[in-house]
Length: 214
Image (cartoon, rainbow, N blue to C red):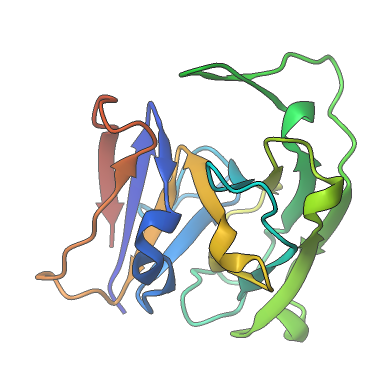
């Protein structure tokens, strides 16, 4: 199976602009254990996904965040001998992690890690294997004005976990997904396929692209 890893640095990316991209069978979000040795792994081990109501929507409705193949063992994952990488998905209010300016998003400094609203750890459990699982229910009435952050991070394992994210529920069309330092795995993609990534602000510099893989 051909696996390629694309990493972007230096700008927030709006992902819901291309729902077909997020749903494409060969496109996965990717995260590696912090001790990964594979050429196709990343070196960050933590990614934040921002779910916010679309601009101009005053009553976005409730949604559910679903994850496909959240743990290890799926056909898109890369495991070295015995799996040892655990992936934690935690839900936070946006304002507990970031401050939002007119054209800036700044991480808040804190001596301690903020307490999540909810947290789920995935390893090799069969309930996550190659299937969609509901993770977090987001209630618009309880969210701050800027929505939620889903933080995905790993321990010191050396595996690569490739997963997918989708939004479901009555308000699904009223929310959008934005991410920083995106790591996306292209699983079995044809060399002639094209994928589009767009900065959050149209006039922002094009993010730096790093391509690696087997």
